[in-house]
Length: 308
Image (cartoon, rainbow, N blue to C red):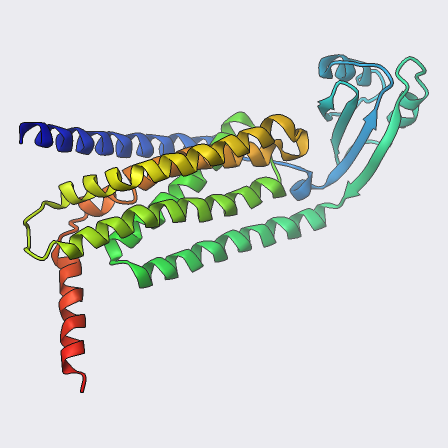
């Protein structure tokens, strides 16, 4: 009996500690977004994107130093390999023929792979449409949760979703990583992943509350701990395999998918945390009880009895 009580107390302490940690993460992320802002990529700001290869192997730092002799304006250089580079510059960059000068340098053997321009107007439209897609996804999720769960569990799942999105955006703000369309797509993927994780735990809580026909026989705190315990193995296996896949994309897919992989990797980590420490802990603090679901069962039973 004492061991069981000790386990319950330990589980509750860990959940509440995780909730406090999640609140600190949100404050940290909001501070980063407010002070540093997001570093929007060319997809949103517009500008020039040039990819080229060299005949000799060079580090990113060496190529950047070489480019500074030909390119007087600010630019962002990323190395996809030691012979494949990607250069980004703003739409306001001067018309200095840096690329022509670079290709004429026989010591480098530069060959242009692609060169494109994205207008700022197109970037603004993409940003607006991306935000609209994110908003519509959140609204659809809220409607679904409102229909499926009692408002406390629904609110816990929604707060967990918002927590995951804000934390990922905050990390991109603090690290000043490029925030482009692939990162925005990863946020939509994070919403779906986190929602699935939160629903599994919340559904188990609801099921145990309904099964406990003798009111208050088992405390809500114990029900939540048992729900987390029964779904924890599944959660860890799913998160672990997904993280391994995303890590492979991060390490092997190169610069184009790096932001997507970082956002998704972070989102899965904080999503697993929020599904345990927010999605079901917050409803408990808001006063979730057995009656919330027992009443609904009684109403359904009475409706069935009244049917001819």
